[in-house]
Image (cartoon, rainbow, N blue to C red; front, side, top):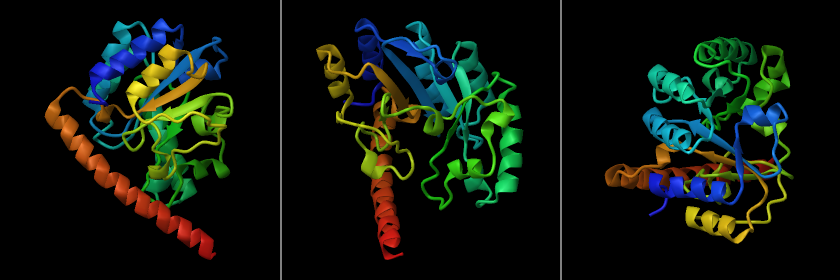
Length: 259
């Protein structure tokens, strides 16, 4: 079975054994870049408690990761955020302000500043990452068409500040590692020449020496569990979400062609 905590730990341990260093996105932005590295990023969309479990696994292995929290109750759990920060991980803001305020840039920016200050109660937040908000017609990255996040002490946003032609991007969007066709906005411009579907395929590539030397891995911890019931529920829900997102992408593509 894929997307269990057991295989997640095995992936991390395999990367470590093959000489990969783990860095946070904040480290990357500050220029702390080893020759072979993995930027481990987690988007905490739902079930924040699952993030604390992965954070403990990583801390036990002596590595730090970046955890990005939304403002919604399913993600914004002060006890969990505080506990993950105390384990030594980076905390960031998983912003979705344009979606929350229907594209109103002024209200969105005011809300962004308020929430950034809030998350800085737990950690000196220096990086942010947009939430895809697939059901919204507003792209949260568009907030920065009229503003600059660096004016607010933010030093990095992955979709703007990582050269993905050099850094290989992997995300478990769609509950697979090659789910680009199910992603509305979690996409990057890259020279992607490798295609993996399962975590076992990732592990095999690392062990065989065919894994890229510079990688950002983005996970959604809600997907990862050893609990059979939770695993099955997530499997079923994600299948439904994938169909809905595929239809949405198809609709948007057809609309663009007709313009």
